[in-house]
Length: 238
Image (cartoon, rainbow, N blue to C red):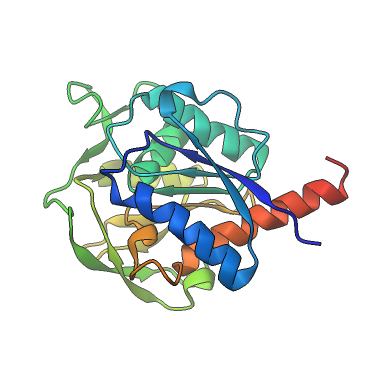
């Protein structure tokens, strides 16, 4: 019997953020179309607490977050405890920030939107803002993203003005972060880890694909990972 997965939606919820309105609709469609039952809990970044009791964590768009520390701690908890994780837009940015600080040892590195005065910044303003844009993403064969998307190219929607400073990409990659999607200029647009089983972050917003009636493959894969997590937990006697 398929169990209902408890999903933490971490972000500062607002009806003015399209993603925040769209995500609950997608969860309804996933239940109706695919039998993937998700029980969503919205958690502000300044009140995160312990997320290890959830079956999946989605660090949603909506930067600047009220609490950078809350967002970063959320990513770390998911990564270190094998909880399926999806980060989109600002979630991508803060997933990279967490990895840089806690895995790569770049403790003082900053986010250009949260601390523009930082001497060393991992996340910086994009040369051209992607707010409201659609753009092609080229996917690396053999990666989790490629297996989910089933293609080596996808056109995706963005709503962001910040991204990874490419000077730090090699450092993150050398420590195990896999960059599995790039734009036409070679800038990182998807990042993932081979462990835990599902850890994926995108600068684009898959939740905004289409009209909301057919969840994006990445959203569907995240939901499947959440349900698999709760079923494993039930069978192991959680």
